Length: 265
Image (cartoon, rainbow, N blue to C red; front, side, top):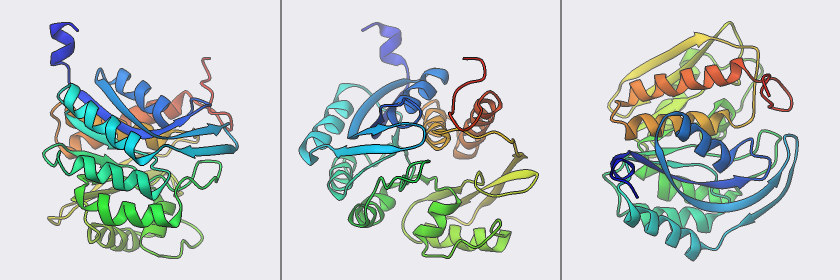
């Protein structure tokens, strides 16, 4: 390995694979490449997916997940950690056990509960383990609006939640342990997309941009990985969130539905 490669910042991605390449580990690695950040990885589950269906999910054994993370941490300096799909409670337990030794490294947790096509990617036991064991280790939690509503046991009514509701949800999520929460507005409506960045110390920031008409699979993966890349590069949390949001906006600008294929491909 060259001296320059050794010095490059690295992000440890802990996530599931996606055979379609649209989300999961494939999307994470492409994002980190685009940010100029090196990657280490630990696979939690192997999935068979298309852009419209989850065919199968195979969680990997707890011991293998644990070994992957510990060996990655030992192999090179890690500037940030991104956690995506866990798949099962055993994976959450393994990740928590491994990362208890890495509390100095910022952790971005994307609480993947379902695929974009609606397939369940984390069962009730896994969700409980994620909340109890990983939320307290998390620097930034990045739920979308349906995930945030589910995690605070709120009914997601018609239309977009109002400002007061989002602030309430953020406070409830912070009460579960993470140091900051970014509630993503991609599932909302209106001319502007306003993500809420809330910190446990009381800070509240609205990250606002014009809403684009397009959509694509894997944008949640890309956003969380982009934020982790920014943190690994030495950016502050708010700056990293802005940089990652702009990256996703650029991604949406060249992507069409429902396939998630680039218009230029």
